[in-house]
Image 1 (tube, rainbow, N blue to C red):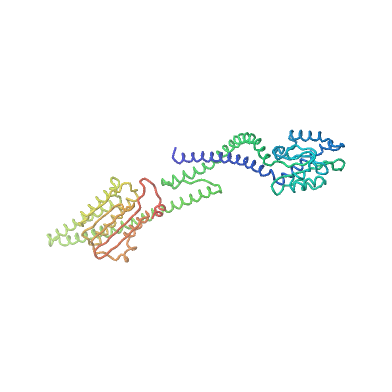
Image 2: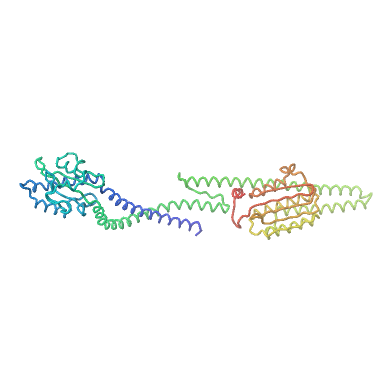
Length: 496
């Protein structure tokens, strides 16, 4: 199993577990929000309206006690207390409003005097209830005793946050009294929490288990679908990183991943075209360089050999000694041409790089070049192991081309070749003591200089050439690439 497959599987499970966790937390948050909303709802105007509707449904039960003359106060008191013990009001979400020390639940007559009270500590029989009520609560009692048809006048939320509700007790359209309720909102909220905690815990466990399972299942299916598509992309990218640009990331969907896959495919196609173009240009440049080298060296030497042989043939009968000298010179020129051809063949295939690193190969080649040309050369090259083959190839070719130019054109007697690591980059400097040349006139026209510069720039490196009558300095530089890591031209160009 490759590292990408393991990473994708870990991502799949992380996505699955995160989706399940989010589902569970969402369910718990909904339940907590529900309890918080009920707490906020208790004491709201809507809550007061529900109290009023509930009282309207209970008030007719007090008619038998108030229709007697005199009213059956004892029976009314027993009914009120008993009704309260039976939790006579049931509101939505099982909210109970019949508890609390400040609860006021009374039946008053037509004059507003207390007939029966569920909490004798708040209002006693025979007392005027108005003395225990706020102004807003008094208005509620007056509206009920007046049989006000508007329910909003008989159930209100006061400015202090308290709630009051009252319902008229009537028989045949005649007002007998009113049923008045002022709940203890703090006790109501506490009672709701205490009774709702168990239900909350039970429902939380059940819902967490149920939705947690659904969330895990759905999260796994979704994560598997997503990671499969990611695997297609990673497989394609890994193949491209190994140089196999023929692999295609197949994803025909219209979302972001599909668009990304198509963009990557276009990039791979452009890289293939770029590599083909680079390869073609490199082949053309190499052919041009070979043609130039054959023209500048071997062709001239063979022409000279022909001249020497022709002169010797002319003098062979009349002056054999001179003819022999011409033949000796022709032999020398032939050996020189053979050496030039051998050097060209070695440049076409630098076998030295196959058996040793760049520093050793460069040192060997420069010493052989020095022996062949008679130009003193000193090499100072640090170990460059770990440099990718394309970098070694480019630097070796640059050194060959530069030294070939020195031998042909500079008239130098000494050359210094330095290769070293400098601030994380590989640099190569070649300095001669020749007669120099006009860089602005030559640069960009000569095939050799253009070839060297393009080789280095293809790696994302830099090429610098300076020349004076006292000598010429050529310096190239390229960032180091981690050993064994494949890279594209676009990557190399983006580093510098």
